[in-house]
Image 1 (cartoon, rainbow, N blue to C red):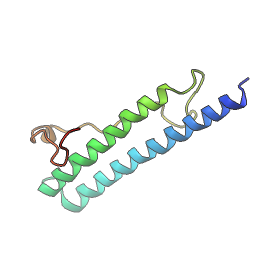
Image 2: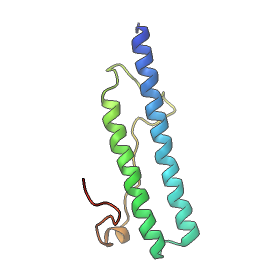
Image 3: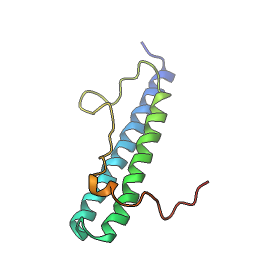
Length: 107
C-alpha cells in the first residue's frame, strides 16, 4: 500500500507522461498537416519538418529522463497507454539533406 506521498508522485508521473506524449502526438500531427499543405517535395516542408522532428525528439528525450525519476513501482498511465514514446524516424530522403539546424548557434 502506497503512502499519500507515493500516490502524489505517481499522479505527477502520470501527468508528465500524458502531457509530453500528447505534445509529441501534436507535433507529429503538425508534421502531417505540413506535408498535406506544402507537399513533401517543397523547400518549406523540408525546413519546417526538420525543426518539428527535432522538437519531438527533444521532448521524447526529456520525457525519458523525467520518467526515470518516478517511483520504482510506478506503472505508467495504464494498460491502454503505450509504455514507450517513439518519434517517427526520418526517411532516407530526409537523411540526404544537409545535417544542420539553421536557428541553433550552440550553447
